[in-house]
Length: 118
Image (cartoon, rainbow, N blue to C red; front, side, top):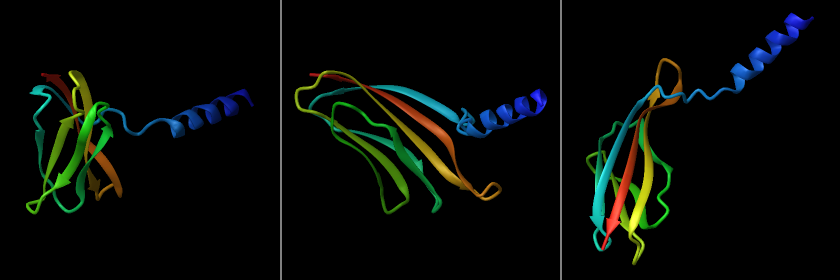
């Protein structure tokens, strides 16, 4: 009976575990900008079943968004709040549909530290 209870507990823990272990590339980059300029980061070209989303939103932004252009290229655009100086952070995750598993998978996380000066 104790063995059965132990197996059930292990099964529940495994079932609740996060499938999003770091099985993807992590790119970290630090950027310096003036608080009067916009910053654009080219995420590259994406297919029909690929995309990107902001996983951790910046805190001190007027604009912090992803847009796909007519060439299937996704661009992250950032503009700081008026008067802000300091560091801001955003994490963007690229994902795509995996035909073998039938699930959407994350294949890259981009962590941007944006240093804003006057």
